[in-house]
Image (cartoon, rainbow, N blue to C red):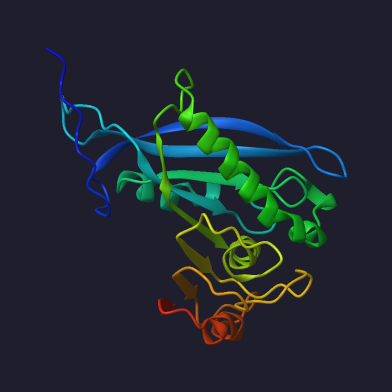
Length: 228
């Protein structure tokens, strides 16, 4: 007799054991293909010996790393989210990740919100296909984004800038982020999903005023500021 799947209880860290999956997603673009290395973590079973498997669909959280960073330095945080019942996908950007070296440039950040939207579309398509490893994994109605530093700038634009807002995202968490001047649009001019702004008070790279600016500009009914 096979074990019955575990109902998903969202939000308690350490509830589930976590699986990992790697994808290389190629996005067509006017300037040439963009290779988006994507690492996923997701619940596989409740903790405890002999626990039955956890089955999707799971809420999906896309994560954007900071400048010259890849997913690995954030793995402790991202696996904790997955262990709480989320599918988490970290996307490494082709011109600003840890592999680019001296060629890394922040000028490409204007393309990064579109990268996340493209990855989201691909992941949802794979989840809807019957024979893919990700089949049935993702809930297309429960999607959020989070990002740190330049990744925070990226998801802030994805959630709130008219240049690149993607209304499939139901919530956004901006960790030490800012309004990026090169984004060709206006922030919070057309509403935004519930947003969380997280800021370290001693941060000298992304100073607190940049997060305060975002928070003050957010006219949404649900906005939160976490000062560390």
